[in-house]
Length: 122
Image: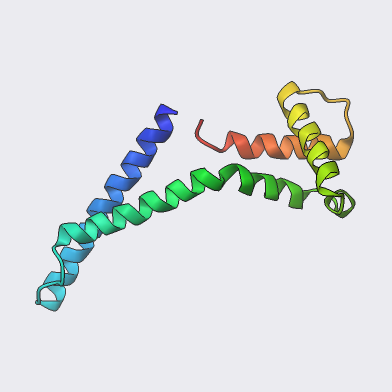
């Protein structure tokens, strides 16, 4: 969690400085004053960066779950929501336990889910 907060802070600070420097460069190139102070442009850039990251963290599990569902065969995708939820729970349990003698489709999906979760900063 600390790595995640540090990464977010660095991205927001970088976007602030990038937005401010970009505003200063435009002001110098066009030789006229901007509507707002350059730091305001930096704040707006940092705000948008923070908002996008916030939205990603709010919907991250939903997005990963949909990617997992779309990686499954169509016969499993067409199951009812209750049956699909059971299949997803089986896949998550397989991923957590590491059992290798399960159904090949579920085992492949568990490996796919594990690879997606390993790419995240936890």
